[in-house]
Image 1: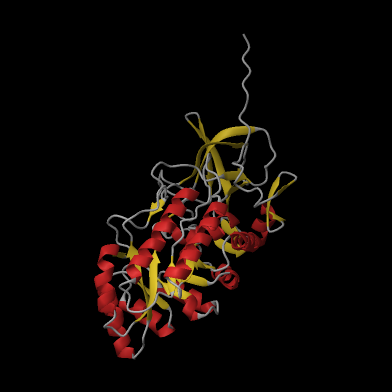
Image 2: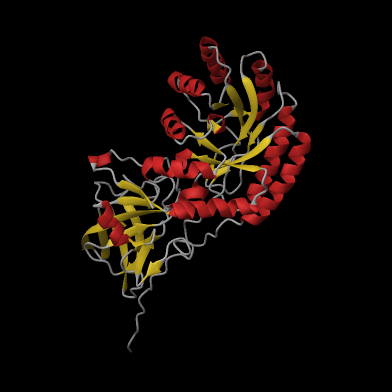
Length: 418
């Protein structure tokens, strides 16, 4: 009896690169160039490439759905490449930062300082002073921080603009990462806010409003709608204790992008329709308030790729390994070591063999001395050889800056904006 074995065909998830990145004659392209050409242009691998056209398209598409009154803020932590931020800043209404380093980057964009907000727990004195001097808005994370800001402001005779970051009594369900609800280092528990607002009224601080961020990386429209509705109601309740009218309600983000098989892109339409209703309610209950969404990954995540090169190919006890010059030290998220409970592969392709049907099951790893250095495990891809280029898609957010680049002291990869 003869048995026919059918080789698995490469089937990159449909959301990976189309329509974001195109192929031509079996070669992946970015910015109108083959990846091999980009590698020659950069002069070495690994490298990150971000396509500004895709970022602008995402922002334009989002604005076409959302009510015009909803402001868009970019969370710089998602991707702090200066050239990217400078190009993105004119397309959004504000920048949200979380360190003195990000403050320096934001100030270089030329955006109005009143549209920069500084958040994050544990801001030290130098960061608080830098933010006060720059006249950006400070998101207060605790009672102690509020008093610290007031003391520093008193020394410099400034009157900082502040919002209170609220830890709500609800969470964003189905989130990749919870940022609120329950016990958390982020923000001030909602039940503590009234007393803190009473104290704030006695300090030389200009109250602006609230920052309520319940979670991130969510692909469920209903969950986001539920959290946004609850956010507005909480803000309305807390506004009764405020020393002045609410001028800004930062509703956080939570908009996710698909990474893994079976995940579908977030449906924005129902969220946008609900935000229109929220805006109407806010116009009555918080008439002076501007409503803002704080988005990072959703704006830039799908516009970026990470490119590395196959250095070696080996078989170990029946498994094939492609050893690349990339790895977790440069792309921690793709290795599964940045928040994944059960490791899943980021979408990965062989850039110069997109249409090849001769495939094999491989493990793609980096060159670090740890078994955690996995780029992709047990994935069916076109048969690759030494010198071929491996591309990790969905790499525009939380890539290089979220990785332990000093581990084993390899050179930093280049970043290019196309």
